[in-house]
Image 1: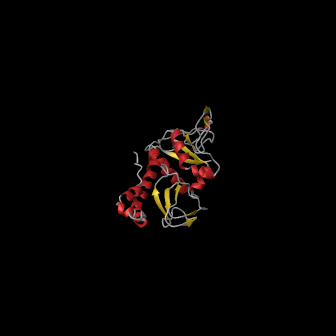
Image 2: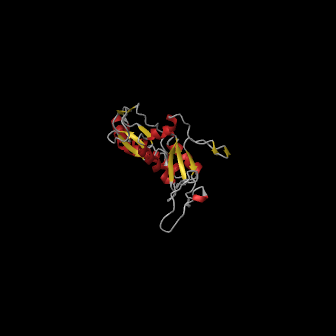
Image 3: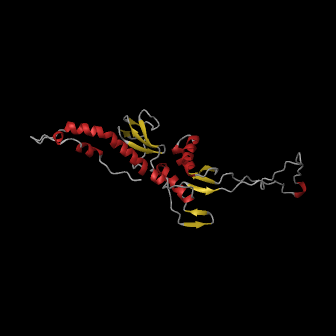
Length: 248
């Protein structure tokens, strides 16, 4: 989908009859008429910019609580793109009295629609979505894999995905055969579990690994941080596929 490059303000000015653009006798322009028509077109200009941001993405800087924002300034956040409606300093974008949410994501829908659950694609998407948090904490983001080894894919991105072993159910027996457990239809003979034998396999199919400092900068509350990450990953994860989030 392509948005036509239309200058609504020029269109508005061209709608003025010649006699309202300039005084034919003195060749003096009529700025008040021009400003009035530009004002009428301003809403269309704003809507065009919002639609363009939604489709192609936003190139605005990330929100920073040490910057003073004026009315009309826009910022990128993990919650979406916000526009300042009341000048402020350090007011969170979650405060709707000062900020208006423009789009739900600073990444354009034309790019997001291409994301899927393939490891390399989802890793790229995660590092792009939380790139600001990575840069603030000294990380570089996504790394294109260049080599492989027995330990896994190298080099790892800052936010990377690892596979989890499927869970399996088995009867656990004690390592000494002479005192091994006896099973009956209504009870068992002993409570004997060898710590070196009993292991719990993960019930998740993959794990999203995020640096601890980055996770904390997404939100100071781990529950909220997890919800923000899952809100992004869930859109590209197949139904019924479970995953965990791990910090390192």
